[in-house]
Image (cartoon, rainbow, N blue to C red; front, side, top):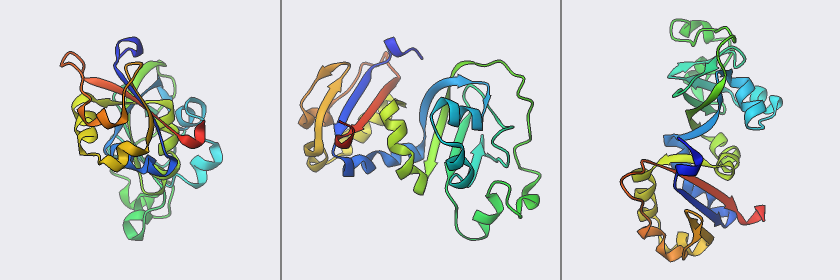
Amino acid sequence: MKNQMTPTLSLILETDKIYCFFPLLQHGVMLQTRIGRSIRDMLCHGFGVSPEYLENRIETIFLNGKPVDDAGSAIVRDGSVLALSAAMPGLVGSTFRKGGHLAAFRSTITHPKEEADVPVYKGVFILKLFNLLVRELGPVFLKRGVWIRKNELEAFLRRQSEIFQAECKAVKKDGKEIKPEKLHEVSWSDEHEIVQLIVNSTSDR
């Protein structure tokens, strides 16, 4: 996936309407970065998440469907699926909380510790955000740019109301400005499977 060949959609949206994109983040979006690094290294050095936020706010981590206790020893590889959540309620939340006192009860499914001596290169992984994290981290990743399957993004845009379109202050498709009321008509040719989505809020300007 190369940036110069990937079609793009760039939006400037009223700050309180960013939540419209949260379902996409929960379903999973693609991110480009240097992979072959630990979750901690990638989030903190690759995406600017503070170590304190990772330690105290990101309570539950799944890598390829397996709960992670040590973000410093779980390696993100090309095509990995990384799911992040704040504290979840009840027994389930306690069981899957990283390093929690009930972690021993899920030892057979916990992601194993890995050696960090693996090749580091540019690749793509899938990120999913849940509960409080989708509100806190979602706008950060949307501003940096995420990659979504073309059909999924086109369907998302068709579902949006006229109110959503009215809250869009600027829209660019592949670098060319279009009218927000035309968003529901946006499409790309079948030769493209992936679209880069960049969303800024009016408070960023």
